[in-house]
Length: 327
Image 1 (tube, helix red, strand yellow):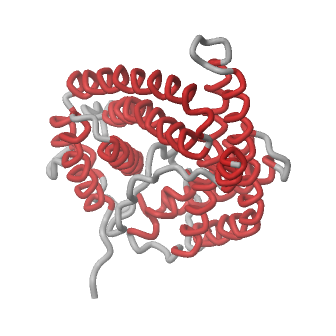
Image 2: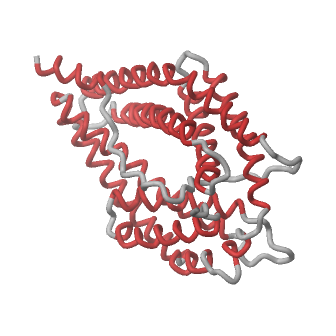
């Protein structure tokens, strides 16, 4: 019988994965930036599960360092998502292409500046050395992850996050509120992080619930991406070489896609609530009365196929507009 991986083993996997992506990040590859960001989140999640060291902890700032790396990667990744959406608009709403090309070129310049800041951040923090210290077997965070306390911490985390996610889903209501929907997405994502740790370490069987959370998070994420781009486009209305009509049309397309995606989310809302309940029940089984630790960052799943870089989907409204413009 194969033993489930421990958090320390998962940490080894994620530090190795992040190290393999660094060359691609330095070359500015979209997929490497995405994969490095996810690996950084997973590492942060594990580090937060490590019990604190007695006395002065030389690694007390490790989590903050990975958070800084994640933010720098995230800024570039956010631009990549918007560029992909803009290219989609250029294809599906060709009459707006002259203006969208200008917007995309602006974003590409912003991406280059973001990549330069990212590379300087990685060099300043000496991420290679940080990875080596993180995975050191005799000392540091990895060594502390061999303790048994993480299991009870994780059970409490499952309970807390499932309740928070359920509350955020209720607060979002069935009417589209951008900020409330985004809040529900963040809560669902954090719950998924904890559930995936539990699944990966063999602490529970939550495959179905994790799949449900993943699909709901994706839909809400696509909504957020399009809402963000629509807000960005509003700043271009008075720019030279930009047509106000083009901005109005592309904004209408994005808003239509958001509403379609919101309808899809509402269809999944009942399943999301049930997933929250299932995970809460899993956390309550055998849980001891001890305070949960706060866990921030990313997802940790040992043995799962790594998520490929997701190109944003245009939404059926883009197809409709394409036909309308072509006609």
